[in-house]
Image (cartoon, rainbow, N blue to C red; front, side, top):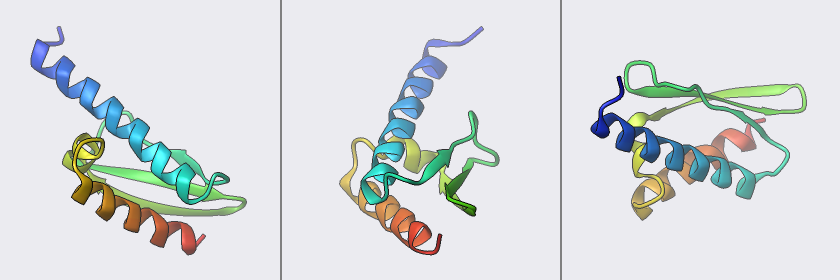
Length: 88
């Protein structure tokens, strides 16, 4: 059974994942993104693919949750995404 607290966290996680996808599409709309359903050791190992090139980045679970609401996290994650996409 999912508790109310877990439900809120899951909703925040989904909002964060959606915001992450928006960040990636804003950097390069041709990049395909695979975000795991759940984090491993509080980290998401996210796959970014463009053509035949793939890059993996790790983003802390808390950063995904805070991404829609904290500009400092958004800035940090956007830089990580830009750096990764530039290397594709």
